[in-house]
Length: 56
Ligand code: HEM
Image (cartoon, rainbow, N blue to C red):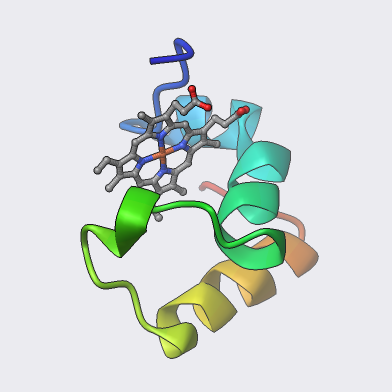
C-alpha cells in the first residue's frame, strides 16, 4: 500500500529498518497477525537485522 515491496533481496535491503520497526519493535506487522507469525520468527528477524540485515 505504501509502495513497500519485500519480494526481492534488494527490496528487502532497502526496507530493512522499516521491517525491523514493524515486525520486531512495534509488532504492527503482519497486519492483525494474518500469517500467525510466532515470537520465534520475530526473533529471527531481530537477529537478522542486528546482524547487519544481510540479503546475500
Ligand atoms: C512479517 C511480515 C510483514 C512485514 C515485515 C511487513 C512490513 C511492512 C512495512 C515495512 C510496511 C510499511 C510501514 C510504514 O512504513 O509505515 C508495511 C505496511 C503495510 N502492510 Fe505489512 N508487513 C508484513 C505483513 C503484512 C500482511 C500479512 C499484511 C496484510 C494482511 C500487511 C499489510 C500491510 C498494509 C495494509 C500496509 C500499509 C499500512 C499503512 O497504511 O500504514 N502486511 N508492512
